[in-house]
Length: 203
Image (cartoon, rainbow, N blue to C red; front, side, top):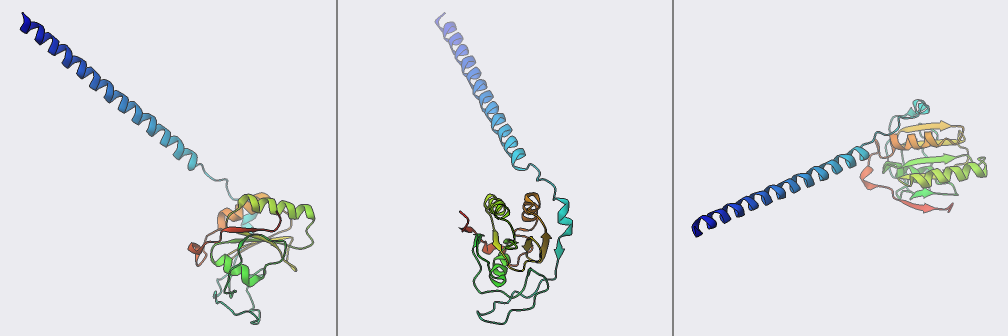
């Protein structure tokens, strides 16, 4: 009789253990499903498609790349194949990326563009409100971008990246952001060198 009770007790214990094991496995499975689902949602959020390029980018001009020679200070100014220059001889030291209230020499920003920067320049005739809007845009992008006035600029605003140039006659945030998305760190000879945002003279 005692043996029968012991057998029953053993069977109950095994059943309980079995049920516990199944429960634990179910918890692991449910936990995995939750984690996997969260990862999928994060992936979907990260890979959300960017807005299409604004139609104004169809007017971007692309020029043959000139030799990115380093030239000493005081050397004769080279003849470039675009205005503003989009490639070619440059200063040995690049301009730091950021916002300037004073002009940045073509040769200094060319070295920054060699590292992947986008350069946004405006004619000094731009109004104070236009300058402030350009600075706000550049500050919000806060990547490898240089913003500076440029005397003699051929348009109110010029957008330049390595071998690429767009001239626009108004401050257009969509166009500036679109140009930056399309050309920052694209086709540059030395993109790994980088150009961190370090200057803000408009702050």
